[in-house]
Amino acid sequence: MRHLYIIILLIAGLLTPQWASAYTLVIDAGHGGKDAGALGFISKEKTINLAVALAFGKLVEQNCPDVKVIYTRKTDVFVELDERANIANRNKADLFISIHTNSTAAGKAGTQARGTETYTLGMHNAAANLAVAMRENSVITLESNYEEKYEGFDPNSSESYIIFELMQDTHMKQSIEFAGLIQSQFASHAGRVNRGVHQAGLLVLRNTSMPGVLVELGYINNKAEEVFLNTADGVAKLSRAIFNAFKKYYKK
Image (cartoon, rainbow, N blue to C red; front, side):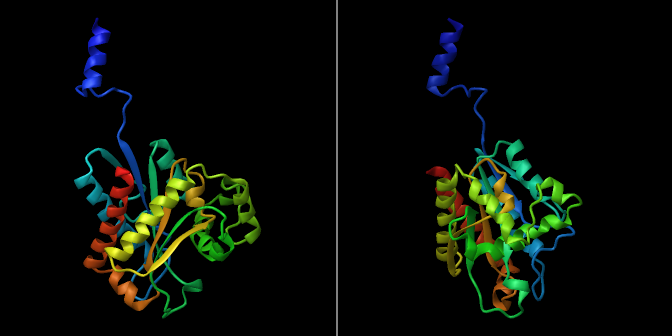
C-alpha cells in the first residue's frame, strides 16, 4: 500500500524521485595561469575568457534554477586540458562549453579579421581549421608529461590529427545545433560578424562524453575587437548572447 502511495505522489509531481538529477552545465574558461593564451595589444586571452565565462554562468544561475553550473576555473589558474574534460565527465555534465578568444596565425598584429566562430569536434573540413586546432591544443606542451598523457599526440604535427578520423562523436548533432544557436545570437544580440560553425580536432572536446562546443569570441589582435572584448558592455553582450542560445537549446 505504501509503495502505491509513493507512485501516486510521483505521478502527481508531489515527490521528486531520488534518481532525478539537475541538468548540469560545465563552463570552461580557456587558458589561465601560466597559459595566457593569445596576446592582444592591451590584454591577454585568459582574462577575456574568464570574464565572459563568469558572466554567462551568473546569468544561468540567476535565471535557470534547475540547472547546475560547474566551472573548470573561476580564477586565474592553469587547468590541464584533460582535467577540463574530466571535470565534465565526473559531474556527468549534460553540456560542455569552452570559451576562447581568437587570433590570427602567430598573433599577427593589426589584423583585419573579425567576428565570432563556434567549433564542434569533427574532421569535416578540418584541414581548413587545422591552424585553430593547433593553436588551442598547443597548451598541452606546458604540461609536464603530455607525451604520455595524450598518447604521443603532437599538437604541432598534422599527422597527429589523423586519430580524430577514427573517433565518432555520438553527440555531434546536438553540438552543431547548439553551436548554430550561439552564432545566431552573437550576430543578432551582440552585433558580431558571424563567421559560422566549424569542425576541428580540438583536444578539449575529444574526451568529453556529452555535447560540447568551443566558442571564439572575437580577434584579440584586431584593435577594435579587442577594445570591445575588454569593455563591460562587450562582456555583457557576449555572455547574454551565449545565455540566450543556451536557453533556447535547453528548452528545446
